Length: 513
View 1 (cartoon, one colour):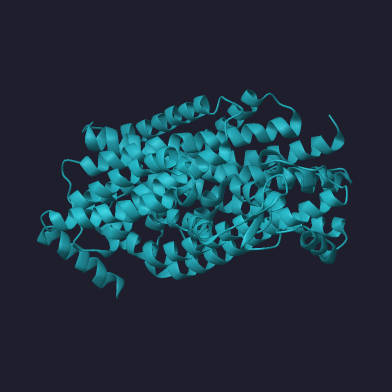
View 2 (cartoon, rainbow, N blue to C red):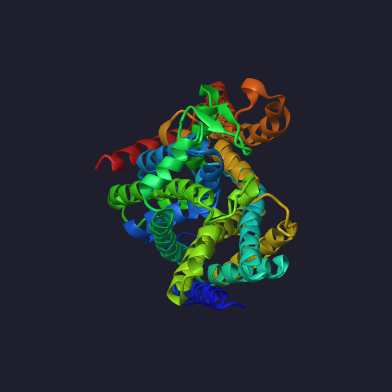
């Protein structure tokens, strides 16, 4: 094992030990299930903003975005980043404050299925059960993709056997999440966002310096046809191709996913003061724009380094996602301090994955223990028993995630893309209708959940393969279908009760104070 590899390993081990220590510290602050799953609604503006965005970005920030920019140029990655940035801002602007107030007023809801059920007074808990089932369907494989990414990272870095590396990573994530719950996950997400930001800054400075300056980087990009363009792009083998209006709209649709992401929406519900949400919105929006912009630029820098012979050519989508690993490895060869800095970059990649996995584990665990066991099946448990059940369910879900991630050749980002679409289409329209339309009722909400979830599968596997104008990201058509279903079914069925509409107006009045 070389000196640089030892330095990188030390940095990563220190980072992972910090995450476990945070979990132990916060384990003493969980006195109830509400604390475990929602942190007692005690998140400050900085922690809520950065934990929401860190849990959102996942390894896509330091692998997906740079890799796509490296290989194909700025069109697809640029429109994706714009869609995500706009989605982030609108989610904080439209949903955050209203959901914080509404969820507490609605019988102090602590999960998204709780909120839907309480919002429409669905005493039979049909809405709760369907929503919880959707979370399990999409979050277990989503969590598995995170474990897989960690396993592949250690396998490439240190040559560890994939399955061993994946299990070790999963154990670390499970440990601090099961001990500290939501508060531990949120605080570690803040730390992880700092590590990500530091990694991005180091990569840009080092990359530009090694390439001989920004002018050299941009000259290389301009010399490649269709590389620096928002209306045309390049295929994986370098062939120029168009990037038309329908494709642009389809790519921008990524932003719609934010309205339905349970692990992000839970951060809104957990904010301690609704009047500080504006501060959180500004922090989150600025960080997301800068972070994604820098990530895209790193891909462009990496292409220049390849052209100059510093890094080997990465010729397909799978290998191009390792451009950050290649740049960090190049940096580690200079000196011991450089190797330690490279270790911080690798820790940043790990942070992207861990910050998402912990939030997904909590959301999936709460769906099973709180919504299905206690809500749907009416299992009676004391507060202590509920805490034990919460941790036990979290462990079971994590084990299922490990089993699903056992295939080393599984595609991480295709799973992420599909799960993102699933949540966005199933929960997004229902969440917006619940917060902004007083006439929507439980029948409309149920129709939205079912139609959105089913249309994701129909469009992905039956319609999109037809190609042509139908070859668009499944989130957009499924989102539209779910929204139409909510409106049509709500208008065709009895109006909500006076109790529900009075609560709607009470929330509106509180927001206007």
